Length: 142
Image (cartoon, rainbow, N blue to C red; front, side, top):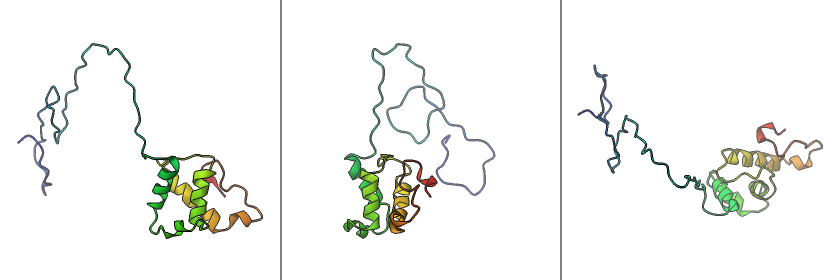
């Protein structure tokens, strides 16, 4: 067979594996992609192609953020108390944070965790508490 085996061998082969390619899609999914590029039809389309990104969460921004945060922690019970540090950080992230992250933001959990440190350490009561819960990247908070 010209298709590589899915079983890993203990010894490398002497010759490279060759793969047969097709010119047109076969209509069925294959394990190996084709090697030759498809030839464009040469006929322009009447309307431009539009891209509609799929949101990473099908719900409100608040629901998406809440689900992402709660699913990222080992114990979700502190969220049952609205006065817990965890809940306060989540409330700040959803309702007050000027960065306005969404459930897809790669630093969402990191920002929530940084907010959690703020509430857990009582930074609001510190004499010098500037630089926390600010618009800039949470890595720059102090």
